Image: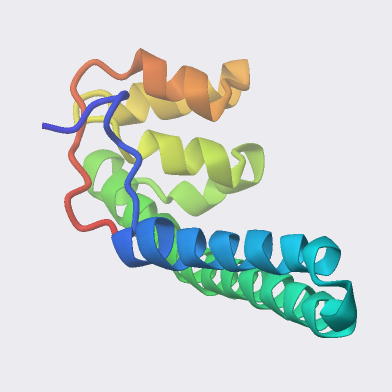
Length: 143
């Protein structure tokens, strides 16, 4: 069952394999700069390359995943809100941040309409919205 404490997920190949390996490579290459002065240029190049690859992989992965996720979350919430209220969420969206909309998706159908209005009227933060949810809707299809 999903709740506030367990709604964050990790992608094991990235978080527990790729990033630790790259961190180890960065540490080894930076140490090599001082431990092997005769090969300092190669270790500087290796360090710069490892840091660049790590940073680019993180940014690219985040950019593509978040762009698609944000579009899907908006579409899902528009559909749910319309089914529950008969009204279009698009009319309220300018008054809600994306973070608020994303937090509202965890609310049950019974809680969603009223919590949406509260979030808008009281400008609740995404975290405050999640803390107000009594009956969480599990998001089992997340990556």
